Amino acid sequence: MSNQVCAPALLIRKCSHHDAKEITALMRQLRYPTTVSVMEERLTALENHPNYRNFVAELDGKIVGTISLKQLKTHEMKQPVTRITALVVDENHRGKGIGTTLIQEVEAWGKRKGSQELFLSTGDDNHYRPDARPFYERLGFECAGYRLYKTLK
Image (tube, rainbow, N blue to C red; front, side, top):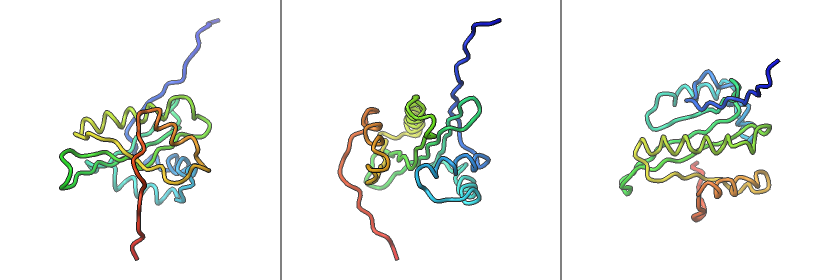
């Protein structure tokens, strides 16, 4: 009889359109309304785009988190920046360092692509996700201003 303890194996990998079902379930935890077919279509469209990347966190082969990002460069920027467009860790696996590991992967990707800055918007959702802003601040993010938007009709 062995006394070995097996720790769960966390793997961060590039997301595929084959992950659409699991990504849809995670996005619904953020109250993002979508279907598996729509998510598969979007993941397929972005899968090989050089300025977009989606990663997943697998814990013992099960997807428990995802992060999506895009790199932006405009005429007023000396260097490109990387924007996190979505980050979610399954509610049953939060607080275990998975989100931090996903952020670290994004930081490395952004640096490889020449980005000097990583940014995101948490929105005005403190009543639903009160831990989001403190999580990002613990990882070195700073709050700078407010997001303004306009719906185009």
